[in-house]
Image 1 (cartoon, rainbow, N blue to C red):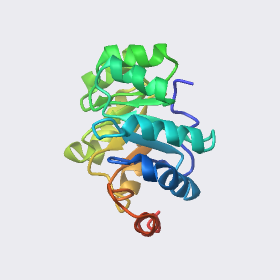
Image 2 (image 1 turned 90 degrees about the horizontal axis):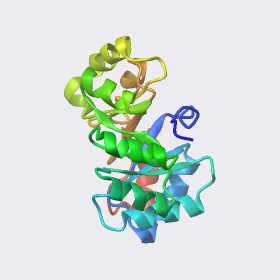
Image 3 (image 1 turned 120 degrees about the vertical axis):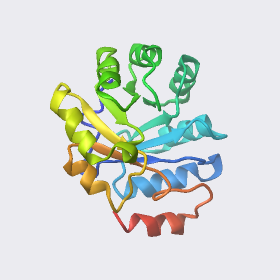
Image 4 (image 1 turned 90 degrees about the vertical axis):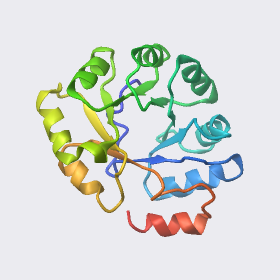
Length: 200
């Protein structure tokens, strides 16, 4: 199952749930799911991230992909696997993390910026690449990367991508976008999240 292809539905958004807590994880996940979000990432650089991953995986349907973000070493990969996570998303392209992720039959989405970084990650086995920070490079960078990368490479734009500008990234060839605070900010009530989701 270590490819993102088939997981990105008609609503190609990865929800980045930074600061999600155990008390609200299930309700937040279910709300996002009802609005068509099928891929959810809980960054590990906040408390309770692993517990939230477990809760989301246990309480959301099987057609929802749950994973961790800001994964930077193989110990974290193993922790996410044990928590029930299915995808490893990193800010960088550590080939050791990619190798171990694939060895555990999980999806690897390493962070890349340049063509060289993209090919290094691809040659390590990653077919979904997180262009980060996307806004620093712009939509033309997505187009340029796609002219040289293998067709099976899926680019995901993250960093400075919003609900308002997401379509320009998709039009440029990104298979999906990662959106954080515009969907969920730590401490948001369900009604606040619902209001944000009206922009979908």
